[in-house]
Length: 378
Image (cartoon, rainbow, N blue to C red; front, side, top):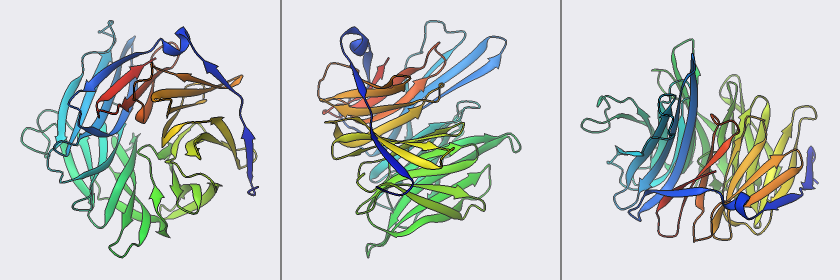
């Protein structure tokens, strides 16, 4: 047993019938050429009963290596619910897209996308500015900028927070690099408002790293990143002041899947797969330890997605039985449910929660085997 860790087998309740299948699913992009999906959600109370919420899905159109986004909005003045999807091109200049990540600023619904053009080993970040005022093409809605252009590979992970002092966002990105001689590193970049990007190395001279699009999480102003490293296992790195200092802790030496992380109000949660098991790692601030539990077995693929809900409980999206599934931690332990009838779907799941409803409702974005991206609503 690892020092400072506890391993448990969690009892899971399987939901079937109407409770499990009362979900609706609709295609977002039907060309059959979609890859690298990620999504974001934000809700804003404007006061006086007025509110807005935003839900967006970023994806790569692999037919042309184009970064795309599909957006839904709902407002207190639109009682019928979500408005129709609006699809935009974010960046059509990518040579070969190799992963992307998305988040939405909770202050005003501003969308941010981090993505990698592996042909030029370039990490870029796009921010929606609207008004045809963007620099990412003629009459673009997006500003695009290069963060790093040296040896960047594979999927990045992005998160933002609004800084009221500067009236702008602080942007955090985690990504990986690999030199031509095979030297690998896990890296970090941060941008405050209009200042230049600050960059640092989290872990140098690593083995192969699996980094999920939702691997980074913020607890207040402190960034965390969860990742899997070949021959080492699932780890979490925490940033401390000054920003160049990162501390890394081993969570599970047997974990090998892409780790998803969320942090909220002192609660820190990580989900990942290990030998076809779905695992959860929970941080205890009172004991300063991580507790690892088995949530479900016989899962498919190595991608999962975790979000902490308003009750500060984790929910996890994953693939099982050729369909997207959801695991939810409650007072009686973990419950698991298949969200739709199996039809070769559930690839690369991404989870967000619609927190404006009376109770949190899951929104699960995933692809089917024909590379069509779907949104499944609880």
